[in-house]
Length: 147
Image (cartoon, rainbow, N blue to C red):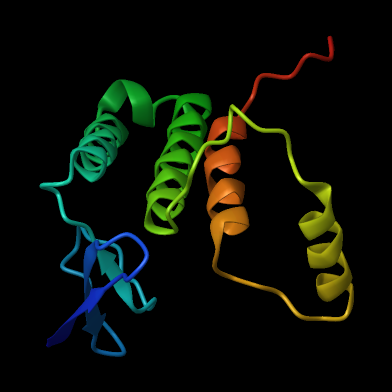
């Protein structure tokens, strides 16, 4: 049994559909049982979300391919790629805005560091959106150190 609700983000006017599952979902043999909640449902009519969900679909298809399941390095790379897709979804949800035309203002960063040092962690805002965007960019960068 699923309970669903809609949320409207006042910052970006996106509508989010959140589905709350029962405490335990039984596996049907092929699906993984998940105990996380709530789930975020994306508006796939939005071009960015549509692209990201297509990336996730392709990753899912690749993870089922015998040539991929035979190679743990490829599986690991696809896991990292899916993490990058997730980070981009959250960056968009948190209203990421690029700032190529202006330098970083370090004062708010220093203030955030002070608050975090005191145990107060902000979980919303443009800095967090940028964190997720940058995390997606840095997912599984090849090592530059020769082994």
